[in-house]
Image (cartoon, rainbow, N blue to C red; front, top):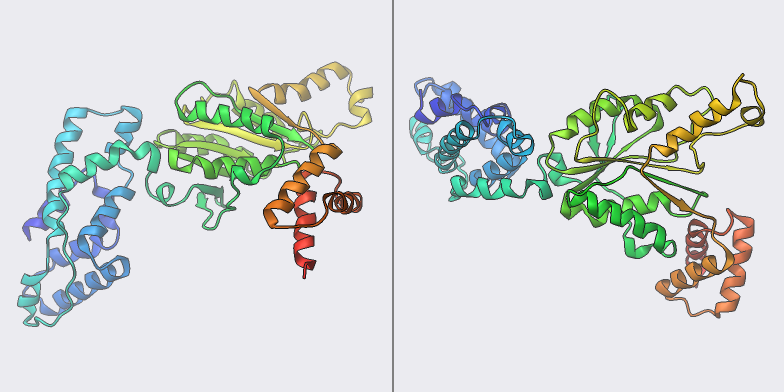
Length: 393
């Protein structure tokens, strides 16, 4: 057995990497008997193909694999679970193997095959015993795996976290108006990122006032400080406990985002969310906040019968409705824009778009547009400006 193969087979901390390309193909190459030329030739070509698909540089590829790997050592750093002395001793041994591995050039295999013209690859010079400890010191900011490459996520149909590869690039500086409301949200998020107590958030108000845009902009603004957004649909609320269990050991901070949340009178998810917010069997992780937006103060459509009494005790029913919103520690109201605020938003957007039209005329046209559309709000203002840009000669 090749000496490097023997050491790889004994991996403990980075054992998961042995099943991932191109390390999987490299291990197969090292395991192949050099006297079996046909198998050796195939294994060599398979490794080169896998390496070229990544980078063609063995050192850089191994660096990326290490940085993407979530393992028992990174979990120890996050949760404190494990024996520090044992883990760090084993970590040093395996990182020393990576030093040797990154310098593997395949020369012996090419000689065994009698073909020096077989494709080669670049080898590395990284000292992994220094590189990796520096890297993991900052995993609370850059994350691991897909959480290092992306900062916005959704749950797919199978309940798995899936990255949004082209997220909305909304910036906080793009948002006009509602500065006081956003400041409350930003202060809460900054406390969360700093490890101070922070509250789950309910953002409610009229449609088009910028609730969802604010959450997206906050996610973009604080991505480099380790904030990640995972958006759920209302029908996926029952998946929150498992999602929180999966994310609790992650070194990053997460906002579980539920957009446009509204319940019907007989909606079972209503009770599920109450249990998640407070009082359930599973505790919310220190690195997780829940944020919901809704057009309704208590996230529930109320009918006359809710108020007048299809049930024996109407007050109990109303109290149940109120109790859900009360479980959010921070409630921020995005009220309907008045004419002054709407005009300010329109004029600022027009200025940024480079319009030189008379202000009074522009506001008059924007008012007409609002009356025909969704009323005075930032979304309508944006639609008005976009319409003006589309028709501008």
